[in-house]
Amino acid sequence: MHLVSETMRYEVHSCEVEKVGDGLCDEPIGIFDSGLGGVSVLKQLIKVMPHENFMYFGDSMNAPYGTKALDDIREMTITHVKNLLQQNAKAVVVACNTATSAALAQLRKMYPDVPLIGIEPAIKPAVLEHPGGKVLVMATPMTLRQEKFCKLMGRYEDNAEIIPLACPGLMEYVERGETSGKGLHQYLTQLFWDIRDEALDAIVLGCTHYPFVKDTILDVLGNDVQIYDGALGTAKETRRRLKESGLLTNDLSPGTVVFHSSGDFEGEEKRFHTLLGV
Ligand code: DGL
Image (tube, rainbow, N blue to C red; front, top):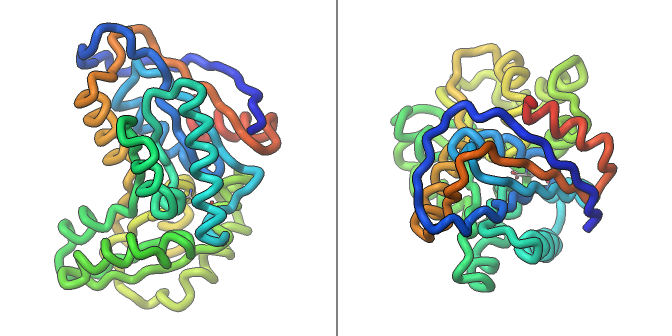
């Protein structure tokens, strides 16, 4: 793990915090993704828990995960979560749908006492809010191949038409910082070619990178379709798990974010700040 890091302070927009524990809970919450996509989850975590400290690790040297073999994804995810825990993370958010489906069950067996929170495609709210509708689910090839996804889809496919769409190559646009523009537009036009005539009601962004290209997705599909992602739900679940374990901080000063990456740290740190919006 290439550990070059920098700390930055962010503004507190909401000061509501639940006082739990005895003030010994100021260790950071670890956040893991294959690259910068987990920043979409980090944004929500900061909104929901502005006083917490966060330690982000993006394995961009090995990205993309979504087109790799299951065993490799599992091994890399376990290694990096282990590293975050060794650096005193009090909980870890696996802010990656691909890594969650590949490794979270095993990680929970390895660390039964640690709050480990994953993310999955937000099919449930999309289907419940559009009964009988057409719901497109965009995710990595690996996420869509997993049994976890098939079970999730199986639970809701009687209530809506669910159309899974693998998006190999899309996360790379976000990693490069290319969240709009002609190249991305062309890529998406091609990606959506076979479904261009479908009257979609909802789109589920089943990869944490995709919220950053949401506007271009809407632009290409050119229709009034509602977009869902699991970031806010994951952030709320993290707060719930920390509260339940008595691990929420008592410190009311602004939290900190530390960024670590296994790749080209300097370029990525810049993109990390841009995506986080600070
Ligand atoms: N951000 C990851 C996810 O949520 C995947 C990107 C990748 O292919 O590495 O699935």
